[in-house]
Image (cartoon, rainbow, N blue to C red; front, side, top):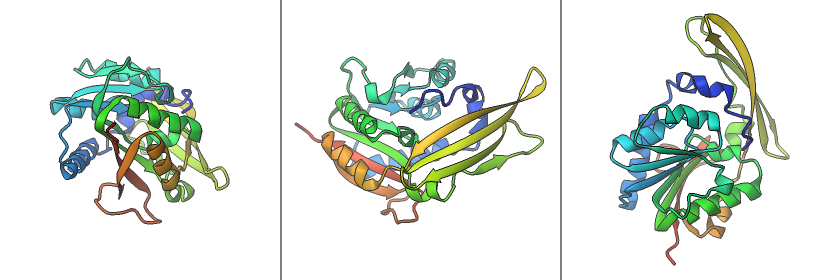
Length: 248
């Protein structure tokens, strides 16, 4: 992921995502764990952003460490003064000094932001190194269907709600790269201010991700259509991977 993304918007990120159903995400993770009959105590939240999921998991009694490549996002997370430990870390260079976790998660299509397949494969390998034998890795990704069909194209231009935004995406079918041009409008010191960010994602195929996981020492337990417990279809816009680190 390009760490020039999620910079200025970090200050407004929680307001921007106020309608995101974080509680639903956590409930879904708990549902997956129940299906596995797996009860983790320690969790590594990879690409944790401003820590909203990390905070919910911590409040449920888990010991949580959150990492993100964006120092700006981590600064917002740390300001919440919770029990969660937050660190600025690039997942492709993840190094927590030999610490091991029962569960690793990476949500909200964060891994799509790693557009170099070799770096993503290395990131998955490093996540595996930070899991106990038999530990579980759960993550979601946007599918090619979502990126190619402009699911990123969104707008909020309500006169009574900030931040306002307009997002327009361009998808390259050859490279599978989606470029999202984002324009934001916020209020700073009583005045309306506009700024832009360009976000880039890659549509990693299910086959690519499966191979990366296997090469990193994981068994792929399940691949789900997001928030359901059924297999994805060609029109699934988001999928969840559930993988378990092979015991040595």
